[in-house]
Image (cartoon, rainbow over all chains, first blue to last red; front, side):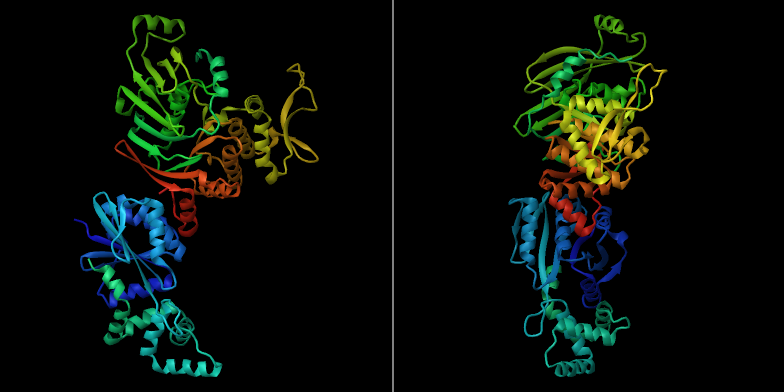
Length: 239
Length: 381
């Protein structure tokens, strides 16, 4: 019996690194090679040449974390998975999770793509986040979750979480940023702050490197707080 | 030697046969070549077939060619069944029996139109009786050796029944058995073997002007002109005479604003492409079946072919089914179709063939474009 497979589609490189480290560090996933994936699923992703993906094992499931290269590309990839649903579901794919910034309407995107490919039959909303697609007697669940926070200085993007974690871990640098804000006479948003943290803390001034470092060095109580903010993801990953 | 009975009459019938706007929407195949069973549904004005080798792309084109023409002569004067049997090479009577999946006795191909109506071609291997043998012998077949005989019948809004005989050397005779009502569709299967078989483009030019008229030439010029600055293509007298032939020679020329060059002086690629373009543009309101038009083509010339394919649909009213292994051609078709406003008329099918069962994944033009642009997805997979 093949393992259940969950595809997690994320937009860009930063999201990819964040969730890869998050799933490993916080949820206990382990990175495994591409070869554990059934050939049709692996080939389909490899033939989408702009896509990069990693495979993680989490309990009795394989998680395929796919970096699509933008929200439009994520939408296109969802369409591709739906076009090949018979073959993919037969090979074990049971869940597709789209992860996007809070400023995107991921629910409408899923509904639009499913409707354009399947028409009005063979699918229904399971709850406010997920659609169930009927595929040859099996179910394929497609859900959308968003990350990012709302409020002053927040962008609704992943940088909100990055900045939050960096602030907890590096109070001195956070103090320096506050001094800079005072000097500038205006508040910076989380995206700008994350870039400054990256400039100060990472060797190559890259946000990706910063994210990997933060999730590696975070203490358990920091991670618990992050976990609260990403409850949707864990719920979506629950069998 | 090939005997072609009633060729001229068939060509005349076929020339204006297809009603403008009628589209083949689906094809169902049973026991034909490597396909035991399969169906493609939702064909559009331009259908692109992709897939790995041995997934049935050529077989689908051949099936459409036979079913649409009902094995009657096409407008190039070819007998479709003979062409299909021999185009992969002649290997004796086996070349005929390989038409049938796993040497079955019967196969069928059904095409469904958007009118809606459908037409089924059945091919059946049958034994030859003594009276037929003596008839075939009189037609020049070697009846002392092995003979293959199959009957075909196409029914629906018309009935055409023929007997097709091949001897071991590939000599072919067609016998008309019955005809009733309706007309066959003008379908043309174009491959590079056909283009290469025109040793001189002059012959192809005559065919184009004879069958397609000035509209066909205009299409060729619309494709060639902007890229190469060609104003016209015309047969012109050569300056010197050839006394050994006892007549003045003429040759097809490409005409630029200030000078003209005989086509035989052009590079091989461009000359062959010109031949292909002339063949392609000949068809009007026809079902055009193009097998791997990318062969021998530099990407620059491939753009001309893509342009001509789209124009055949947009300006000449043809329905085009094209098989390809080339992503550049797919991208060019999508791009040219966007430019000419017929993008929604394109569909891409990725074929798979497992144990004789044909299956497919169908992409709309918008989807194919999105997958190519956003993911650089290899549609041929």
